[in-house]
Image (cartoon, rainbow, N blue to C red; front, side, top):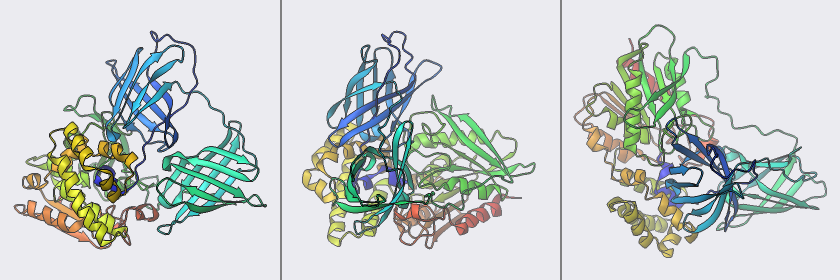
Amino acid sequence: MFLSRHLFMLLSSVLIAFVIASCAGASDDGDNLDPAGDWQGILSTPQGDLRLLITATQAPDGTHSAVLESLDQAPGQKIPVSGFSIDAHGMTFTIDAIGASYSGTWNTDSQGYEGTFSQGMDLPLTFVRPGEASLPVIAGMDGVWQGVLDRGDTPLELVLNIETTEAGTQITLDSVSQAAYGIPVTNLARDGSTVSFQVPAANVRYAGELDASGDILAGDWTRPDFPDARVSFQRSADTVTGPNRPQTPQAPFPYSAEDVRFDNPAAEGVTLAGTLTVPPGDGPFPAVILISGSGPQDRDETVWTHRPFAVIADHLSRNGIAVLRYDDRGFGESTGDFAASTSMDFASDTAAALAWLKTRPEIDGGSIGLVGHSEGGLIAPVVAADNSDVAFLVLLAGPGTTGEQIIFDQSLAAARAAGQSEAQLDTLADLIPQITGAVRDAADAAAARAALDALLTDEVLAQLGIVPAQKNLVIGQNVRAWYRAFLRHDPALWLAQVDQPVLAVNGSLDIQVVPGANLTGIEAGLSGNDDVTILELEGLNHMFQTAETGEVAEYARIEETFAPSALELITDWITTRFAE
């Protein structure tokens, strides 16, 4: 999904992320150190302390790779780091996604790497082996506390989960409306009837008072650059469950599901892990390879507890079509460097998946197609161009215009859906081409950074709704190799080389890849192809859910993962051409 990696980030608040805590083990002078495993540190930022976890992995050749996890801001989300080096003398890495870097040296006394984390400013950061941390016991607070955050736009249903164990009183936050669960909460404290806590992921502080019953907590929800909000939590006897996702496949299945791994011979160190579902019977069966949208995605393209690729694979395999889906390189169980990769690198991974799938005896090697969603719809034509091994394409919200045009259309559509005035839209329409043009025309990341640094004055940042403290973060996100390549990408150059059957569909409410311009562009690019079906599906959003507005905020609230009518359309189109 293009939402996760583009200029739309300039229109919303961005989380900075970084992090984690202490404790030791036996003393080591560094010479006998095994650096693989977890390293934690606490980063003290102007917004408060944040915890960071680095997990280092050693390859057979002795080299190391690593992922980063922000325990307070995005627990469970693994961010690949680049240029990672760790040994008995030091640790260094960069995080291209946020324009950050770290360099530290081994200190025998502290049994850790002491150094500097740089992201617009230099901050001290020490990484040590994790230890068991005890939490204070906060009496009288255990339970499930339900509340609503309402600033006049979209109310957010919130739940505090508080439980006291031998390790102390633990607390997490669920943003039920956004399908975000288990968000870490820190610094829970109680002084009489006064209760306070922090939510580092949103840079939120809360302070409130318990009523006489002790079951109602009313206070102020404070976040920099946002108006304060009054939020009341009430202790409930009910257990709050996750959102209903009725389409998520449940075993037993009438088809086989096999966990698989295959290498990309064109990319050293890249092994892709995925799932192959095969219909019952002897075959050979037609098959598809699912290609995910932008941002690090698992094989199910999981987002807001929806698993759209699992739903698609289940439907197709119940209808005689085998499906291969896999974790993006450097994410989930796949290896490689996600952060340093471009769409062309991901196309190389899809080509490797195609070559591997053709070796499977239960698969009809002449009937393998590519199904790409969002950025996956950009990648599919790249792989299929002049490639007889690809039998067909299904483009789900795929781009038909340049990357730069997609950013422009998407940003305005999102701003319009958010209710911005015509004057604000005019300002965006003027600024966005200046910003994307500066990045597009830059010779390299350094030149792009310099151009944006000059362009994003305090006045321009204010017009974009960005505080000056976020300037370096925003610049870092918009000078990466992936983004610069995406802005320059013109799908017409690849579509003209596609002579296989193509189904291209968009939802009429898609505001991330707007249907009009993109479907028109795909149709023009495929003008020499005699088997092309292009459809705009009424009432569906970018995720192909039945929606009301198409806004991103709806995605989590909608129970439907993928419209059944769209599933039937895809299945019928494929089976009409390739099933026996």
